[in-house]
Length: 592
Image (cartoon, rainbow, N blue to C red; front, side):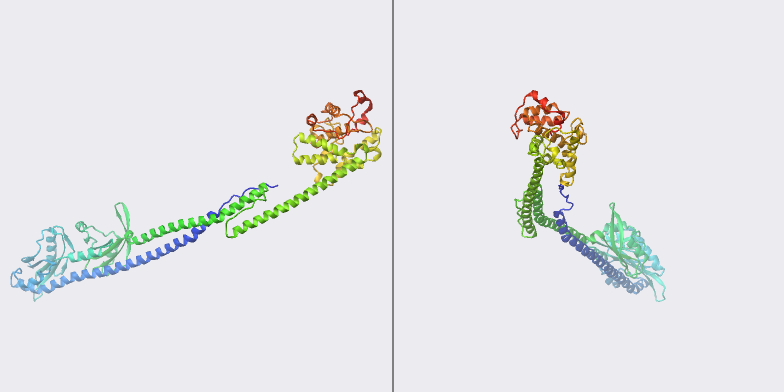
């Protein structure tokens, strides 16, 4: 029978169902969320680009309007300033300058002749030397006939962002007679930039060299860093004159960390300034990261839920199957067909359990039928063997029942030696059939009451081989033929038909030899009367290692001493001196 080996499960139902639920419940969620996040990211980036471009264009236009408005006011006031110089009146007492100075964003106005002499109207007394330098720069430029607009400047003393505008003053002949300069506050522009710098967005102004000039952080305006190495400012410096440009990405080092920046630039119309709008990518896409966090959170929740549901459903499936598998093993190993499996389920697994119970019941019935048939066949087989043995024994009235008795003695010896049931069965069959070859021996030889002649004895010696040839036609008896054939072999090698010696003789043959000899010695024969059990046992012991295996004789002796051997026919004790006179060597060969 093949030994059953439990199959090693590579992927249990629990793992499979859990993985399936994970794939169905979580992976589509992750894929869809990732797709939505990508779409939202692209839409957000597009919206930011558009917003930056629009804001840059709008704010730059407002800045240009603011500056150009004051430039136009200065130009319109220039003729009045010329008349003031020509009449040598004090512009400080001129009523013409009153409306201009009433503007809250005009901080100082200067009307000077070509010698730099004139009048000043001021709301702020600027002490910063740089302001004085800007005034000299504007005066020189105006004397050369150039309308001057300086770069925005942050006066750290007054804490004011300012812009200086200057116009040359010409008389009716077109001659330059002086300079009109005005210092305008850029606080409205700074407020505008500050308002736009909300939610992480930074809006600032750079000049034509890339220097920072206006920034919501006043501390940065004091430093006036040069930003020409940043991609956004570089783009402005390369495309001066354009109203706006598309957004670009940039990186900067801050606190030892690389920060990605998204931004846009716009040139201020008619000015050499650039408006820069930028935002850190991390801030810009904060909503995307929040969406990713939410997606991950819900993915984890769904994954846990899917795993729990998968485990629950998998156990609903796997537990009954494991019960069914264990029950099948119990049935196979212990042949317990009466035990019924009970599966509490309302699906196909319960149907499988009911089917299994029906199958085991049918198997039990079939096994019982097979066992009965096997028992009947075995009984028929053994009856046939006994009939054949009886037929053999019937050829010689003196050996009637011999095969049955040899079988009984052989079984006693085999049990004493600890043979298993299968081995005992082979001993029984071999003992019953050990003389089957005598069917081929003539009755005149078998029934001869006197000693056999040498020629007759040679014929008698052929019965083991004849028996082996007869039984060779039956495949089921192949394992007993060697023992049956060797039941006349002697332990010292003097036996027949092969002259085998000691362990060369099959164990069955050595065992049958002792049983066969014992029966021959304890039953009446034409050439001798039956011996007693004790006499026969002692006689056999004297022949150990000559005719018989000592181990088998020892086992037979123990069985006799324990009363396990019973003679089938009462024996008569004979005088010890008669033994030697009534049994010749030729007769000794017929004891078996």
